[in-house]
Length: 108
Ligand code: HEC
Image 1 (cartoon, rainbow, N blue to C red):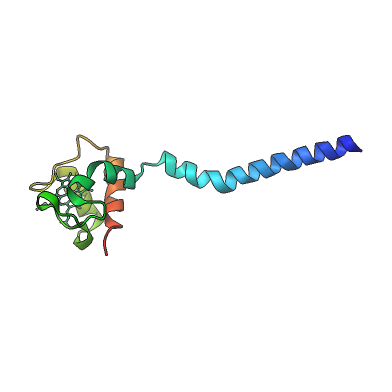
Image 2: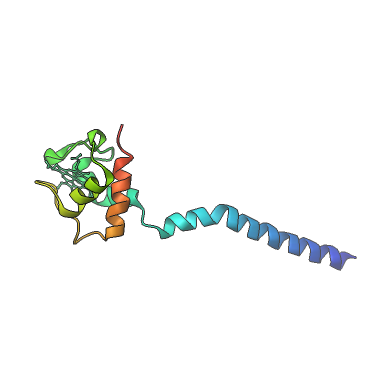
């Protein structure tokens, strides 16, 4: 009888552990695998645009006021514009897309 209880609780623990895995870990795993636009922004863009996008260092555009479409944002980041440096040789296409999406979340 005791063996059965042990076996059942072991299986129960396994199921519980697996359940936890799929509930809690898969979303984090997904974001960890995907490129993190926020991190890319903090690493590369904060110097000019600031944490909230509105710092405006060296004449940089206030990203909270930006009205560009996502394609246009991606184009500015990829090719640069005036004092804004192009990022195509530094960031991958995927990273540029992710950071473009993140920069658009800074809008008011
Ligand atoms: C060297 C400073 C500098 C860095 C670093 C920089 N930017 Fe810029 N950014 C600028 C300047 C300056 C402008 C305005 C360009 C102009 O006057 O045409 C600008 C413009 C923009 C625009 C256009 C906004 C609009 O609505 O016209 C976007 C989007 C943008 N930056 C995103 C980014 C992102 C994302 C990063 C990080 C990958 C980044 N920038 C890094 C200086 C910088």
